[in-house]
Image (cartoon, rainbow, N blue to C red; front, side):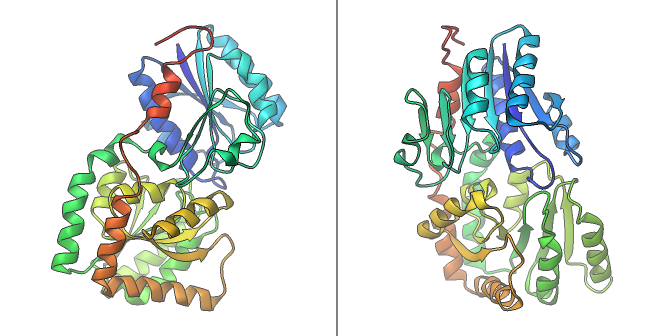
Length: 363
């Protein structure tokens, strides 16, 4: 039996969808299902992450929604075994879902937009504060909704590291040492914001115990950023670039504050109580950014989908430095972050999904 996961991971999209689907794949194995990733064959796929996951994968051409559904159903038929299907592609809606639905035991849709029609057995949206009424008019009546950040598809290692994180954050704001800053602007950083933030931060490097930029190997800005870092480190070796971090929880434990996006990585940071200076990097982050602001666990640097004016950039770096020197504010943000993502219902959506079948097959 298989868990077949339809997801895309080309550079313009970023790697967040892929990373949470790799968590689904790991949990599928624990339920005795063999995971297979199905991805559009686009330039710049992060093959290192995919191959390191140990998952089988299958590439399909980039075609229309209905043609994709046809190709996907053909692939399911070729497996000649019961399949639980997960789809994490925002370009697909009810027409794709309805075509695939009869060909699988269960269909799980991962979403955080609530902006189109859906047809599935299970719908998961990890946006903090998401309400059922936002989906009721656009999803089929039998779909089970799992909403809110308690259903975030974060790797188990984040939750396992939470207690260590609590002690580290406490040590930081008690001892008040120079903070280590992580800059994480989406794995692929399609807008090239890492270069912008390097220029904003370079004159403040001595204010930090180190500055780390984080990117995936399919980010086009890596050569230019490496050149900037090399030129700077000839004078002062305090800035580095990490590519394809394979132990993200440890990387977050090693840093004290983050400049980062408002996507699923913001929830990873919250589990480890890491104060965030948050940028909106995509439309689907708007709702979550609003919720994180209301919860009071981030400092909001605004919408950076388009590079803001110089005055907005300068205001952003001023906020970074405000947090750098305000340990009381740091403590408040950290404590609120720890309280954002409850662990009581961790993976309950996937447990339900993997143990349910329309055909009566139970795992």
